[in-house]
Length: 522
Image (tube, rainbow, N blue to C red; front, top):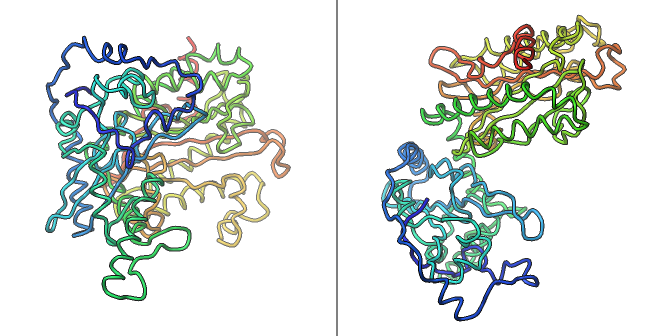
């Protein structure tokens, strides 16, 4: 984004540190400091394009989400930080990603500014929403060329207040003005604690100070505000819960973004298959799989939605195998669990398991078709009014029945399904479903009664991902099963009268997968 060239207030009380405070390599700095250089670098620049953009598509949806939050917290100031940069090593940081709740309520995704804060200020029965962020520095300031963390010479153009206000359909103010918000914090003010721990600490200090002053003015013996054990404040936890539960049912914009993320993921999977000759030729073929998919994620979106699992051979039995440093050998299976994250942060989460040489062995096909049967059984449960946990139960009935038929269980399938037994879970210890959206494991702070025990509603999006994993050294299964891991994961939308498998276009049956692999290799 681009816009007006205003000089930024470099106050550091609520913003990122100045170059002097945050320069982790000051001992090797060669940044010019002569007065002649400073005068010269601030002149001779073309005028910026001052035109303002129309509000982005998601601005209207974000406003509707804020209205729901406002109704839940009438008369209470709410503070939702985006978070800040996180150090990777010395003077390098991880790529910035705003907190999902901030993105959800502002519509500001991959182009958001580190350190930004959304404040919902009570105004009668509603709230006035303002985004505070550190605006770009003018070209006549030292920050413009000398600050590697935020200077435009280092990281490129940064937005103006006016540009972001038009883009998001929100009021905006400079980061220095956030001091006034902190000064007005009272004990009822709520903050999303996990988004920015350093900023949360400032809010906590302000609330404690307000409580102490109130206690002195009323001669009270105890302050009316306290932090719970571990630094938690129960009303803050309530804010996090409400913001998480707000995302359980997706709106029209969110569903469209998830569809686009899934389409991009499908392209990435096919591109992986097209590179199988190169993948199998490399000692670390799993790394090639990871890299090919990551390229598609960066072309079609912001990044991968989570660390890709490119697990070949026995690595496929390790649920979160993300080292991805093993070979890819013809005759083995590859379990690829990956998703493209859009610039809006909405992510797909798809798993497909395929034979490297294009043909399942009889035992591989036997395991694959059992997992597919479990996935289809779970999908048939999905409709409005069903309970979320019933999706998992349907898949587990198939997993128990199959592993019992194969003689892997010490009891019958019916006995294994009893809560006190669960022997079949040895071969699938994870759950079958999780909500999906801005986070790959979305809505994680929702109450159990709204999540695991929740009633399915139209607009919910979640995964169905049963699997079977037979470790290479598991003596409870025959040798021919050992080292086989299969997972099939789809992304499902609850509709008004049932469900839609959003990822159904990605080959799922054993025959379809074999044809997919062979076709891509041509």
